[in-house]
Length: 610
Image (cartoon, rainbow, N blue to C red; front, side, top):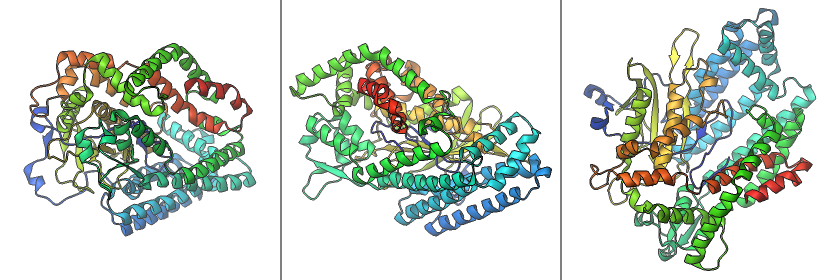
């Protein structure tokens, strides 16, 4: 898993049952009257807290209930797999082989997520530990199922017949076959057993790596002078150490604020260095072991390296295509990136003297250059984005774009008082399309990144009824300690639109199979809807809709500011793209460490980017 202090994409390890998290920001209450966001009838408000209509997700399980549910999920899964495996090869049909597996996946995914997502949001240490233990048990079971040769033989027998119900069912069957064979079911028994041992090690190390980062409570202490430039509301939100200094945690929302706003170069450098070193001693050895194990895993499957295995399902198909693509883009950006970097170095020299320019300076001086170039202050701009107003604008824009209606569920069962829940309806037909939860504000022990989690995938059952999608949007907005409405930085506004794109994508998905309804099934496409929705952040009409001075929301940002924001979007685009290329390149490099060619062309490309 990669973490980014700037709120870039964060993805959980991909398994059919696991949490699927993607980039972003968050959402909360909308302005119901102005934007047509409907409240439930008053008689519903008097009922007891309840689960959402059509949702199998359980959001307030105790530690013991989580473990019991995980065991029931595993037991039911084993029962269905045993039944499918017992079908004689000459009597296989869609209804006795494929349909039971598809139904199991659809029905169990929300139950699995009920066990797993509490580790991201619960305030109870016991619940988080139980959730992690449930994940371990379910992971082990899913791995066992993925290696069941008896089930593979039956599915293969049906696939060989070619008696497809429809094109989507054919695609689902082929996906099952692909998953089995990528787990080695078409290999010899000796190789399969070795693969299983390696896979167990990979899963255990991956989970340990993630848990180490999530549980890291490291912090640095600074005086207010050492944090000069950081807004007062941020400083007020920081805990104090025994010596009276302020604690800056190494969570991404703290790190991003310091790297972007702090005027003191030594402070920025200390935070950047320590952020990069988090869990370094323990996680570096884990990472080294993972690289070796992944290479071994890929070789057992017949691939030359793990990059070949990982890219095989993507549009690029081969690592060579990935490197060629990245190199072409990098070369085309070279001159522009050099000029942009020179400008930032000059700014630092004027402000701090002859100190070398480091990665810790990038966010701060890009922001300073943009403020000078476009003549606006990002701190002042923040005053125009009260969180409730921004969210109401998002609801309105999405409603008009996609023909949706949002209804806040005031009596929904939630795991924290900060959490709100919404139903989403088709505006024209009134059909219930899905639900989503919004867990917006930062708190202790909460997952430290903004993301969207699929809690229940949409699916069409064999009896014709449709299971509706349920999503969770997690964000890290700081509550205003003075009691005023929370204000969003413009980058947080963009993130909010991005995340809402994932929510809409998930809820509007009409696939028949749960496997195809999830956010991460098609990794080449998953970010497209979110990135498309971001475009509305830069148009004047939408900027005016989502903005209003926090002391008088009837005063949106001015036309000149809207135009400046649109121009600002493309500032330092070469350097920003170089950074994205580097993020794309590093996983490929780690997967190619065993290939001799890495020491030449790949190394040169990496040096070009850095």
